[in-house]
Image (tube, rainbow, N blue to C red):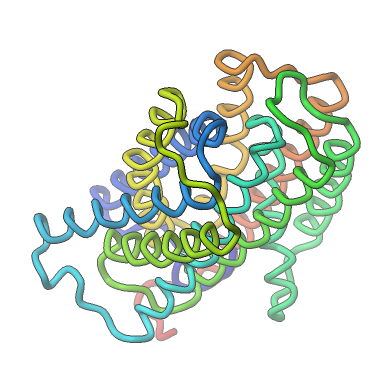
Length: 319
């Protein structure tokens, strides 16, 4: 949520329409991936399955680049490659990898509600790098912390296939990684082709997760994997690649504060799907905490969007 060149509307009606379409894909698909992750980890090792997912998605994106852009679509400088690799380690590797591990013990809807705090983390990171968010933004962060405390103290969600006291905390650690990747991707040089950016990030993150799975000694028995887990994994490979590319595309053409709105749309979709398809049941305390978090995120995103408009740099101004 910085006031850099990325914090401006996309130029041109066509580009703006594509950017908003991409954000819509992120809204819907990322909201559903929490449930797909839950199904996949029921009989699949978490790190190895996540690593294989991102490696497969990354290869599919590389194929798409070759088909639609040719070898020139992979052209990038070393700093741009470094950014893509860093974002891959932070987003698919750290962020998504820890969510997959946590969802062995956390309901998919609760994981989504906790991940909703990413914009709050972004504000904290901005403060650490010397930026001064407006007072309304800081108030939103404090409100969000209260909501997170209620969620963490509300107990496990009924219908979850496992429970561990550290599960929700691991999701919060995952959110910190995702927020760090979001800030890095908005402030560092990135490859000109957003699909290439996504492919490199997925391949690097997938390799890291796979290495972590083997290092942790995760068992690999394909015969023990259920049909439901396979369906969840295939969904994550195909639609996860689409949504990650859409996220990167939107991040490069819409204000970061606008793209961050996915954080309070995804949880609603995830909670509804968890209740309908996985028999997850939230108590009144948990729903209240989730509502406070979502309201805090709405407050932060709107305040940041308003601040970005007020301090917008005119097109053509040197940066």
